[in-house]
Image 1 (cartoon, rainbow, N blue to C red):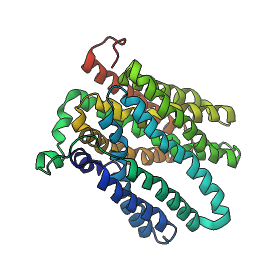
Image 2: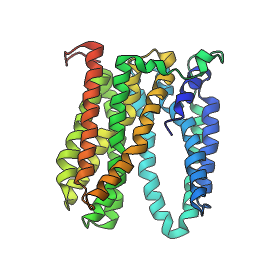
Image 3: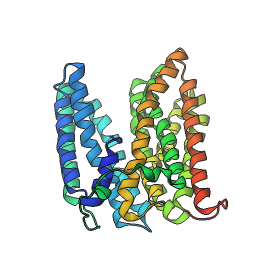
Length: 343
């Protein structure tokens, strides 16, 4: 999903989103539609990981970066509104699948998701455009340039995104199993993910508005602090407390929503608009290694601790603490030590 953006970003900047998003839509819908027909392990690897992964790669970078080509002063607001679509999907699809599994089975449930995806992604194909003129397909315009990682502010911004994404998917993956482990009701345990995405809907939208007035890095730092505190102070001691888990799902969902909506805006602070896709995709190519390894590392920690969750929760907290330090350094390198400077 993220690694292929290294090439997709420069192509998006040079040629616009049209053909990238069209190809990505076809591959993504095909992947989900075929998922129900998979029987062997390699079927799932081919259909979901390879075909679906390439499809999402082609769609993700243009979808997040396109608003940045049209907006500068209100970029946080525009990107935040655009990113709320992912939270709506995160609310609808789990509830939809949970309802359809018992009625029509796995295969037809995934085909129903494919149909919904076809409708929504087709709308994206029609509406998504580029404001900037197309560039010639030269080596400088089309090929990746890793030298931009030598820019200190961009390097620390990328490192900050890496660490928060390293921790982001751990609560999303393990929250339900944590609740079941502590004998919470099965229905509620699975609905925690929908609650998290409900919080994320507002967390992608509201911080985007705030960022345009309080500063993009300032708002990102504040939301990362909230992710850190909620994980350490709510999830870690929650145990069998339903109230604490519901509160954590909503608060962490809200705070982590900015991991999607504010990261591209922070990247946009350190580059020119015409290079926005290149910088954003390069950052997320590095981040892809964090998203790939974070959940397996957490699972390994869980196994080593004999099924006790404190270790993976502590690891998540450490990821957010490291990300917080990197974002603070990036801001200091840009505008100095004064925390009141809007940036």
